[in-house]
Amino acid sequence: MKTKSIILLIFLAMLLLAAAVFRLLITRDVDGSLLFELPLDKYFIYRLVPMSAALIVGSALGVSGMGLQVLLRNPLASPWILGLSSGAGLGVMATMYAEHTFEASFFGGQSLGAVVGALFSLFLVFSLSRRRGGIDPMTMVLVGVVISVLCGAGIMIFQHLVPMGLRGSFSTWLMGSLPEVESWLRLGILGLLVLIGIFLIALWGPTLDAACLSDDEAKSVGVDLAKIRRRLFLTSSMLAAIGVILAGPIAFVGLIAPHGARLLMRCSHRTLTIATALVGALLLLVADDIRQLIDFGTGRLPIGIVTSIIGGLVFLILLLRGRGRV
Amino acid sequence: MRLRLADVTVRYGSRNAVREVNATINGGKVVVLLGPNASGKTTLLRTIAGLQIPSSGLVELDGANITKLKPHDRASRLAWVPSVAEVSSSFSLRRVVELGRYALGPSRQRVEDALAKVDLLNRSETLWYEASAGMRQRTAIARALAQRTPGGMLVLDEPTSALDLRHLRMVGDLLRQCASEGDIVVAAVHNIPFALDIGDEVLVLREGQLVLAGATGAVLTPGSLGDVFGVDLAWAADDAGNRHLVQP
Image (cartoon, rainbow over all chains, first blue to last red; front, side, top):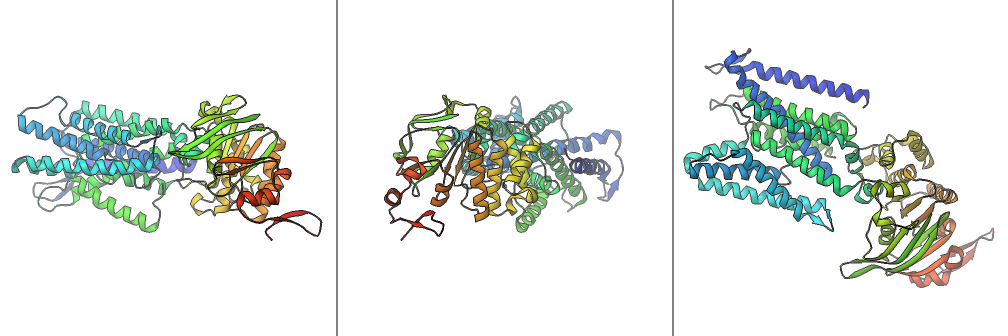
């Protein structure tokens, strides 16, 4: 790893630490004024949990997006484009609807629903994209968009079916939000899975570099393309599903974080994976910090709205500058 | 090293892109592949390089079925240069050349040598998307040179289509040098004088079929080429008495 890359990674880690400390300190008083102080011990957990969730979700979505962009050789690829996030969303919606209809809690609840939904989308996209024994990246994008649209329609159907009173919680979930109450065991397991996913993709970094050549060239230098595509697709899907399980549909982080990391450093995918994880976590933490600062008198904004505004603007700037390259 | 093509046929749907091609090529030779557009040159080259599985027939490299070779094993025996190289990342030209060593282990010396041979050593930090078509083509050739094992095989699809005269000569000399070190060099080209210049042997395809094969000087005549390409050709001598194919 080059010295410049190491310095940039340390710089990113320090920014992340600063954003995390800021998140722990910032709060609103009952009269709506902003306070910068550590909360009482009994309230500390309500800041520590969303901060930890932001780290896990941001890094998971960022690295998932990077993996998919390499997999598809498409700078616009993200868990959303491939229908993974909307599949997970549909699973969550179906679980919420079933729990409401049968007035019961199911084993695994919405988490299981998200995993099943993501895996179902994954299976559909994967099996419908196969051509001549391999996966065709362009077909995969098109199939992903179709699956995403169909899952979106499914989500709207569930929204339509539930009573008016429940539509609010459906809508809130759809906008994306970081949990303030979550078991440490669940956070720990999901965080560990994200770390494993990031480690694996970083480990495959040199192969990801070579996979940036055309199919024929990549094969000729010794890349087993079918194998790396399978691995990337599965790992990226797992990371995207974890993001949805913890925070619902969070837009743009998976798209913007890899581009942000590439703008900061030109390096191999091994280093880039670590940088993308840091940028993704930083993006989500900063978005969470920003929403603490905004007060419309109607409660804090869902974080999905903040990431959409930041991500959309950054993405537009990237496009206009012509820097949207993988 | 010995390459053997036995009744190689490649079908795309109901269309035969390559039909029952038979040939044997020994190491130390430059073999040029000629033919009109859509005659099956690229398909045949990809099949030779193990990138396309033939619908029927067999491609053997030293007795081993090329399609059965493990990716690492294939990378150590042959290198491929496409007609248009693609890189979907903002890598420098040097980084692209380094990728040639993916399966074989990094070698700074091999990368430096390869860059120097294609006249890119001073431009190696240029980013891929900022490079000209000619620079990209030379980079792809350098990547193959960095990967190449002497005595192996180099398969090139129109490797000189974007090159100026100086670099055309440079690449021609490189291919001859590789052959002199025992490589099998198979290259599809459209430039007939270049083919005459570098080729020991020639394979001529028309509508997927091998219609001419043999020593370059014997096979490439105005009559045979005129028949394949559907144009009138003739020999013309320059002041030094060298013969050139020209269109009267």
